[in-house]
Length: 166
Image 1 (tube, rainbow, N blue to C red):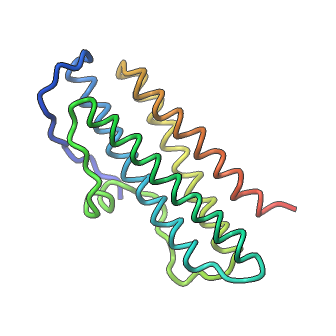
Image 2 (image 1 turned 90 degrees about the vertical axis):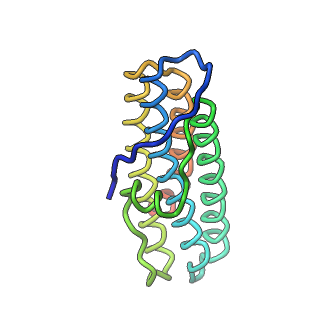
């Protein structure tokens, strides 16, 4: 259930116009919420996967969770650099992210693989929209942050989705 939340901004001498900075911070906080949600869902898969492929999937899901933490940090720091207040609180994550929810009853490897592939594909689509929106707002550095995260998400998506093939 994605919601637009007005984020407070701090005084800064940053050279981007206020409107551009405000638009970028809103985008960054929205994708931050998604990255946190991806990390939580990857940990859910990591903790609960069972079956003969347990160990490689357990490690893969943990890797995705760690990457999601890094993506979140990168986007949060960019929002802070723009004079924005970073909002990664649990309530904000729930309110801002509309990534698919993760079913708690999943334990089989194929179910976790399918769910994580769906979550990463959804996050990737949102990142591509944010790349475009940051470009339209006139913020090439934020556009680059989203591009960097999108490349990394696509790699993790590839690693996850490879388990659905063959």
